[in-house]
Image 1 (cartoon, rainbow, N blue to C red):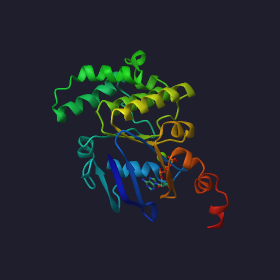
Image 2 (cartoon, rainbow, N blue to C red):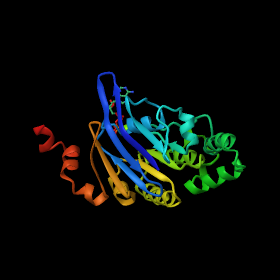
Image 3 (cartoon, helix red, strand yellow):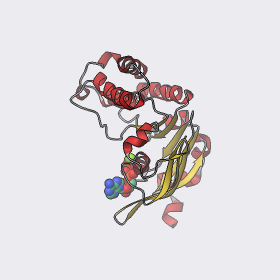
Image 4 (cartoon, rainbow, N blue to C red):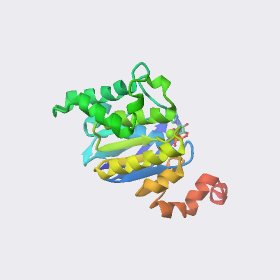
Length: 243
Ligand SMILES: Nc1ncnc2c1ncn2[C@@H]1O[C@H](COP(=O)(O)OP(=O)(O)OP(=O)(O)O)[C@@H](O)[C@H]1O
Ligand SMILES: [Mg+2]
């Protein structure tokens, strides 16, 4: 499982995260929601090693990875997708996924057949028909699947997904949700940042709500939907204007 404890991040004079703690257990989908600018991507960047927290610890399966390099975290089983697609645009869909499978095989040395893993991932995420297309010629919704496929080719134990349904239509999102449930059922810890509330409420076991860099609520999807503090944070009603 993934655990972030008391993580704070500062950008100049701006406190982007203040003592944020979150746990994403193996075999579950944990939601992380919050208004724009709440600090969701910053938390992902702190967990994956792209930004350095001013305080706090990150552990993966009990191993403290705070302060370690990105590739060490990847070797501990951490994989992620990006809010702004970060695909290799010169490569095809298949090559994007194969790069990840190939890099993993070099350090994992577990005799995984890179070609077979790549093809299995392509089928799993449903990209067979566009496998030979350059990623610049496919729609964003499918680009999201390439990013998921690239993460899956790393055989992750912890998967961070930053707005993976953005750019997908309703049918794609529904299919995507079913795929996430399958991935979690196999024992992966999934941490999902998403603005599509129906996806979050359908698939998450537990939801954490971030606002202005602080966790303001944790609960089941139905508890979160009924939480007035959360509604205030999203709608900017009484509680906020009074403070
Ligand atoms: N590299 C950076 N330098 C300075 N400020 C930053 C940086 N990255 C993020 N911020 C600021 O930190 C805050 C949190 O940003 P972040 O991108 O984490 O929010 P978010 O919850 O992911 O929002 P969204 O839902 O729009 O993606 C914002 O005020 C943002 O402007
Ligand atoms: Mg973000």
